[in-house]
Image 1 (spheres, rainbow, N blue to C red):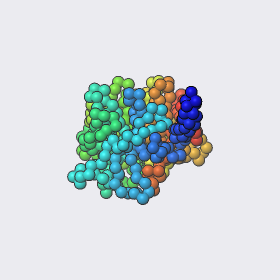
Image 2 (image 1 turned 90 degrees about the horizontal axis):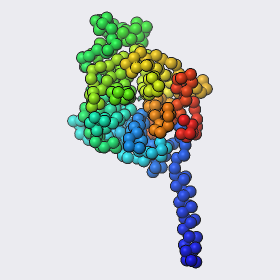
Image 3 (image 1 turned 180 degrees about the vertical axis):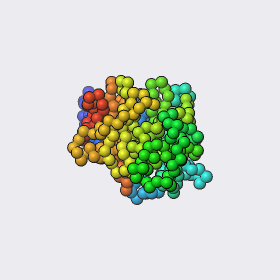
Length: 380
Ligand code: GAL
């Protein structure tokens, strides 16, 4: 008996100590803007990301970015993290890797941004799409890339990159726009005349044969299982909503233009009670600008702008709390609960960019966001 007490006297303090240490290691709340340690204590390196919930686990895919000293060197690909509680994330490694072969356009040094993954019920495969730019060509290529995997965490097999919808007109493109003959060279950029011409399809016509531009992007699956690739097209002036084939690996050629000439990027879509809501940003590169919200009653319906969804100080609203949208995440097991996910970019050290997660709240039936330096899921 004495021995047992002695042993317990030794073990109990140790157990208590390890409990304290473990508690300290765990994240207990969202702290937007701060370093967000993964289960190894390293800041989560998954930027411009997207999360899917699969078999009771959340998987976060994002841009694997390099630190300050590695600036402008090759990018590695797409990272993946997993979590059961949305707060504590385990690094699952790179889901998609750049290909070390000069013959491949997914070679080190290319740009891979805003990756999103879907699970296709029909094929049982995981499909990843991402914005892809070619090495040394800045943001000129405006391609979207697709990769596929049997396992959620990868490795994803790169299939190809393309400009979507070559040789097809948008469904909501009037006949007179198709026939118009005005060209880019006839106009001075950013003048009123130019803006009207852009709205009336200047770039859609220019890119008709080769396919439409695809930069900032997201994916959205509708209630009927149809998936949409939503991307900034037309020199970032107009969003295109493009239907994907049933296997999610290609475009059907059915697409619409949304908010023509309004310069939206960073699209993030969600659905609630008969309404589709879309968060976007304006186009100021890495610098944040006022958030934007739009609504529609059908995915291929009429999208109406609803203004700025941020409810902070005037300065905070001007920069969307220092963030740019990437996804609106439905929280499993909670009714009508969504999280705004955004990026606060640090262009000189992209790996250090911060994750700005905020609870979606409601005002007159529309989603809004407020700033909370420290919050948890009870808020939803
Ligand atoms: C932003 C875009 C980012 C990245 C950046 C590069 O507008 O949302 O994903 O492409 O420009 O400047």
